[in-house]
Image 1 (cartoon, rainbow, N blue to C red):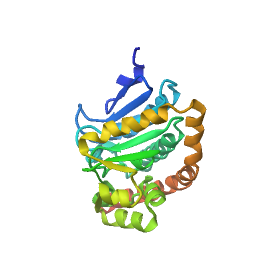
Image 2: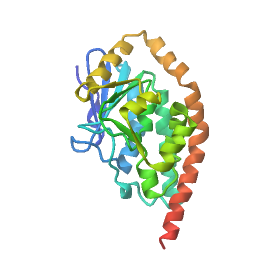
Image 3: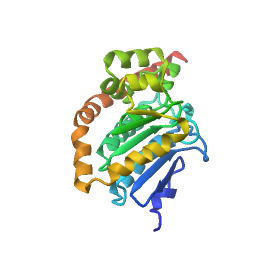
Length: 253
């Protein structure tokens, strides 16, 4: 069976799909661990829409490449985010991407195949979350750049881990290891590093075998509250984030 055109369409996303309808989606840069860019941010909107419209997809496994989920970012590629019009593009994309993860009509299994210190919220939006024993979690770019973490990381971490833990993680810029994430209820399983992706696929195969309408409606049922929080709070959080970006530019003059 031929692969759909979107499998080869996006620079930083690799796809494969097995006979059971399990779609494996990997972030990458030139076949290695991803360096997240403004183009990746923009492309995710189209990626998630095409996944949702492809009825051959019955479950999704989201992971990284090599030994990291996401731990590098090309800040300048995001553009002049201190300018309102440029930031509005980022704000629109950021809010919609999180919504589209939750709006997928199929279950998603997130696999942290290593450090997830950039956009860790993508993994936390999974319906089931597996971590390699080498995985770590945190929020690197916002504390490092001095920009408020309002792009959804604040909402998702608070909902999944609780307010006090989210505040500690996002204020300090510290990281937690996989076992701590398990204790916090952030992940469902911690497995040996070389088993992580295969374990995610195993779980996804079980979910893919569920009746189609059950898969879709169970996805909606179990994500109602998280989706409400994202729709209500992420646009405002990103507005505040944009203010800190503008202030940094002003202070640098």
